[in-house]
Image (cartoon, rainbow, N blue to C red; front, side, top):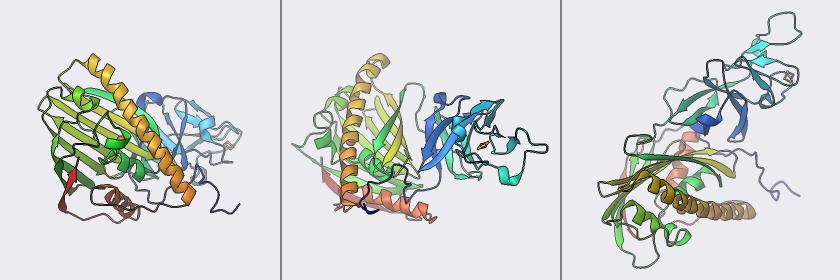
Length: 352
Ligand code: FES
Ligand SMILES: [Fe+2]
């Protein structure tokens, strides 16, 4: 089998990977036990040191490259299970059992990655041995009074840009989510303003009526005009915001982490304010949201399989594919170290 005709490796990294903070786990899932994960194909391990601070290292022992994640955390250091070398959260070698002399040596270091807990998630900076100049993205409305906050982790098929486009794409909703969201009949024209924002792009939908499907009825039983924004913010945030009357507000922020070229982890934080009790909201809203996400997973799985089957993407687009190409461009520019200085705004019409 030639290399081209082989299926894409699960561990192949993405090209077009933008440096920055990525969510790799729910904070509550990271304990003193080592937890392995892949960030863009790179095996890393996270654990908590003796102070409870989360740390992340390359998951490769400096000695004979055994996976550190198979070892144990002893007094806040990770101990390799092969010959017992120990490393602290900064990757410094703290013990070489049997060695008469100092264990610490520059050649025995394991690369470390900046790591922190924020808003219920564990964030890791994608580049080794650097101190990031900014904090991870601050998720709006999460855990604020009046908002029910739901966190969910999902494994989505596809590269980050395809998963982000899907999360922010309006035209598919009448088909993939028919009945739950929008319908493919009785369409009305709306305006869409697409503008650059700090580190990203935003689409604002103007003149949309409350969707007739279940999701719309839960959030705004009284109907009315919808205020809707979709945003992509580098390197990994896809965000959908709806305001339906002044009593209903939903802001779904997904942090997308490429595990490999064909699998993206989605860490979703949904903050909802609606004129119904939390318990009902949780009981009704969560299953509907999960159903929508499973439908997206299925179409993304098919799309990913198709791209693999044909060997490459070959996409045609129109102006109503408002964010997909822009997301790809932002990622490409960020990956190559070119910060986008583009500040623009354009308006289109769309039938929804
Ligand atoms: S491979 Fe880790 S201690 Fe030898
Ligand atoms: Fe969808």
